[in-house]
Length: 489
Image (cartoon, rainbow, N blue to C red):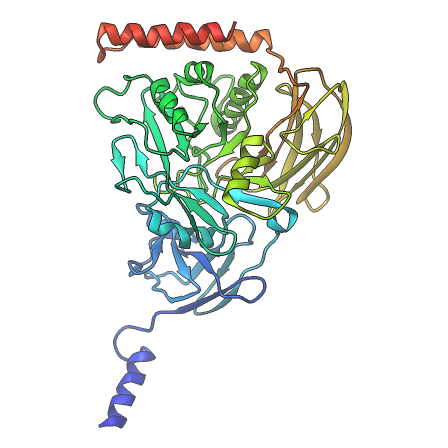
């Protein structure tokens, strides 16, 4: 009887009777250590597909099964009919691998950013806190504040006493974070001692004004990120209270496509900014508009994993830390602008030997050193001064590196940043640094101030046409617009 049972077990295990065995996958990093990584099933056409029977594995996205699952070191996986291959990836710094399971897969870095002193973070995350440790490891991401209050929605009640959690060596996430996303636009609030009053997205989306939430959040110790500059109310809230950062690698940049519209924000001039590339230039130019108006705010990055179809850490901010990683030092570096944002290539900029975020006094001309690196083919790198491209650099022979040095003229109160682009057939892949500034007092360019006043004038016309607010509320919103407009005189 024992021999018969063994024979039957062997028959079922080898797939000779009933369903074939599920392939077993084992994942190792570049040093041969077991790791968590993202696994996607590829269909017969090589496109990502849902993995059958994957309920026991953590989803990369709760509503998009094609984005894959987290395999924590090893797992049996199930392939859909006709599929023979899987794609294994581990964030930005690892080369993806496509293979036919079963087997052991050893992932390899194409770059080690932490070894260079740069540490990654994603500032727009909508995931349940319990999911964060495994997601961070699978993305090889170091820090992510997950949003636990989003308007009238919450995935964490009551507000926690413990707000910061470690998730393995040099990885951490926080839970004391909120988002206000309504008719005026969207902002992210990090590190609030208690949640500000937030309002529903449905119903009256325009009132109370966004600045009322900003002020309460600031009083509670929040770091405030203007999530995108495309929003109707962006120059109003920024004129009344300067944000700590402005989104540049924003959630409209998706891994496999682009959302090249402004959602319910102010529509762009598509004649001037056509298509996906035009949307990217529009996002950059809006950031430059605020810089040229005298607002010194670093660039930020966020993927909106859990809401939009991105894996955690697809858009990320790399912050330079002189010492060891900690969430506190990461936040300090991000706020100081010692960073660049990316969804693919890596970009290193030094101006007069100094990193982004530095203020350089008394300079009319500076030495600029730039290096861009990518796993794929680079298109170009550009040096931007006060919003204008002043130098363009081409890639090396293998197309994966751009490097160069130049002397660049600057003016007091101005700024300099760099950006680069990696080829992609489906999206815009880029990196962008925060600026280096020249002089303690920012220049306020008349044309930038005029543009922001014109935007507020258009916002006031929009408010006058709103049908779902009272006349008292309308006048309050218009009064705030007038107050912000005076800030751009």
